[in-house]
Length: 103
Image (tube, rainbow, N blue to C red):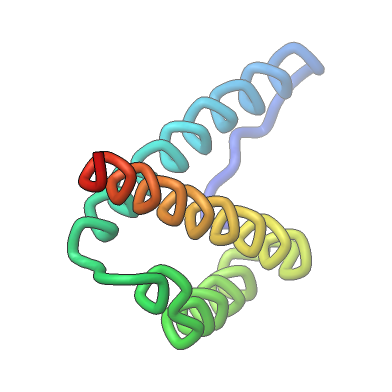
């Protein structure tokens, strides 16, 4: 970690954690918006569940974990959960679209 605020008490630690939580949730939301855009370019289930792309992402975040000093196992678990969620979300979105077109 290049720089981390040297907290003087527990309140300051909590303030920094709260600040990070806001940033993390904001980044998850932003990532979700890009996933939603990507879904518009995909055709069929095979594109949403592209194992090659998932492997690529997992290798990249594993490398980043090492570079940034993050817990690699935790990072991998978070990303697997997030990817599974977004794949399922895309599947649901596609089903809703198909149902709308069939009506």
